[in-house]
Length: 172
Image 1: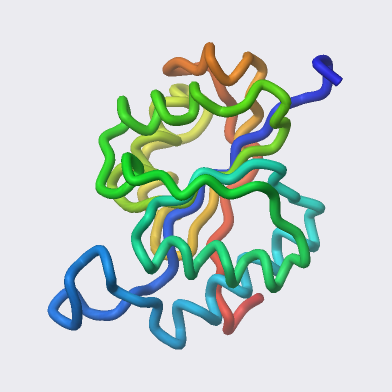
Image 2: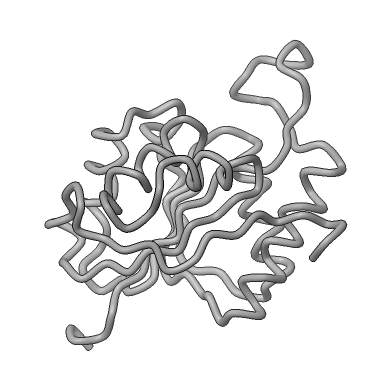
């Protein structure tokens, strides 16, 4: 089992209500956001992506995004709702990921911009173009990264981007 590859699925939450609609942490997904998250989940199912461990921000919109993905993909692993992911910097996100249980092979992290796009850029230094990452990390976006090291050893430049996808209900 220790020889099987590791994957990281870095997910930016789907479209949320306007910033003035509720306190930021409590903002819910819009109808479009829910539909886009389900479209992302359908893409997960189509590509056989099944996270066995999930780090999820405690914000309502990230929890709802993951719930929609799970419903559409018919899969989901153990979820740790982690306060540190909310509005986290890249170094904080790296620290959280380094705490991933050793047995986990495919891990998802559901968070916010600019942290999640920044995390992908730092982990994949050289394997993805920054402009491409910026363009793809709109709401309901995901990057799948190959992780050739133990979770505790994650560092800048250690991963390779395998896929980038944006969940959109109108082109799912």
